[in-house]
Length: 113
Length: 111
Figure 1 (cartoon, helix red, strand yellow):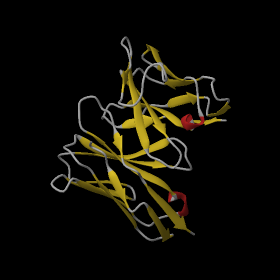
Figure 2 (spheres, one colour; figure 1 turned 90 degrees about the vertical axis):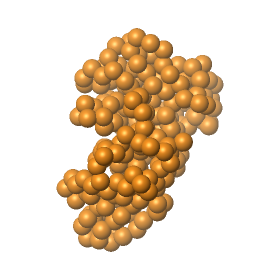
Figure 3 (cartoon, one colour; figure 1 turned 180 degrees about the vertical axis):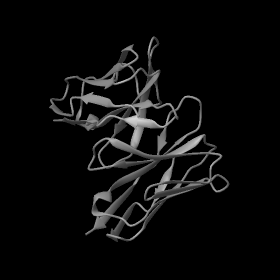
Figure 4 (cartoon, rainbow over the protein chains, first blue to last red; figure 1 turned 45 degrees about the horizontal axis):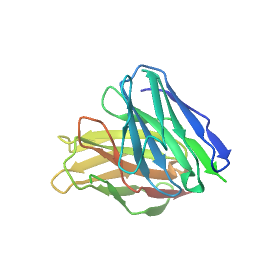
């Protein structure tokens, strides 16, 4: 199984600012995913981040709000831009293992005040 | 949407009892996965069952899949207080490995 490290684990941010979340994997993976979990809710896919190409965003998510970088096969970042209280959520990165199971980082708990 | 839907939304049992959670989905899938989440932390992968499988076991966990009914169940036997968590099913239907999650079941195991 892949070991995924996310930073920061939590943060409290002022509205209007931006936060960049880092995701580091202990092995090379082709596909990485970013999910959002709003308070008391389930997970929703934000985008798929593939190395060497633009991220693919799901309906309701746009690059200007959630820019993603994928500079190599072990690392990705998600930025939450121009934050509002509605962005308060847990953000999780995920990778697919060799048997197609998905593994998740510990998440970043973001509170926007 | 392929969304999984769990029921019940919440389940409270005594230690030692069995807990059963159900998941339904809407379209064809490649696999269905179950996850556990403790107190809003990261997700722990529990078990994956493929569309051509009907039942899988892992320790105290038993998962069934009925593709004709588009449903799955997760059984936790001899529950422990440490099993207290939210449990989510997630389905994957394409070659892109994207997961669509259900709303989850909050399981409370009372000592």
